[in-house]
Image (cartoon, rainbow, N blue to C red; front, side, top):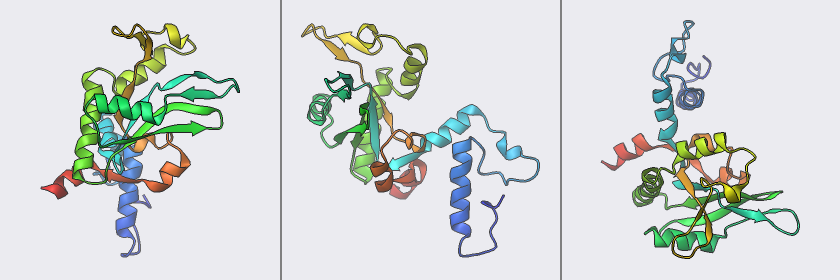
Length: 209
C-alpha cells in the first residue's frame, strides 16, 4: 500500500514505479489499486507472465543456456568461449551482438549473455535472436522443461542437452535462449546487474512510433 500512496508529490512517480515493478514480480495486477480486498492479486497466470516478459534488461540481451563443456583438471566447470559463441551467432546471421560467458567461483555457469546496442536496432536484433530459439522450440519454456525432467542425468547421453552433429559426427551442446527479463536478474553476475536497467518493451515501442 505504501508503494501505491505517497505523502510527497516529489516521490509519487518513484513510488508508483516501484509499485508496478513489485506487482509484476509477484504476478499481481498493477493497474488495480491495492485496497483491502486484495483483488489486485487476482491475476491470471498468462497475464502475469506477459507482464514479466515485458520488463527486459537494458541494453537488450539474450541469455543462452547449456554452454558448459565439462570439468577442468582443477575441478572447475568449463564452457564454450566467447569467440566460439560469437562465431556460432554469426553463422546464424546475428553479427551485432556481443557474447560474454558468465562465471562463478565454481567456474563457468553454462550461460552466455549476448548484449545488443541500447537502441531500437539493438532491441530488434535481440528480439530476432530470441524468436529464433522460440521457433526452434528451444526458448525459455523449453529450457525450463528440460531442467525439470533431467536433474542428475548424464549430460552427454541426454538428447535434450547434447546431440550428434550430422555433418561432423561430433557431439554438440543444444543451446537454449530467451530475452533477458526482470525475472533473470538472479541468473546474471553482480557486475551485469550494476550496469543494466529495466525497461518496458511496450513503452519502448510506443516511444518509437
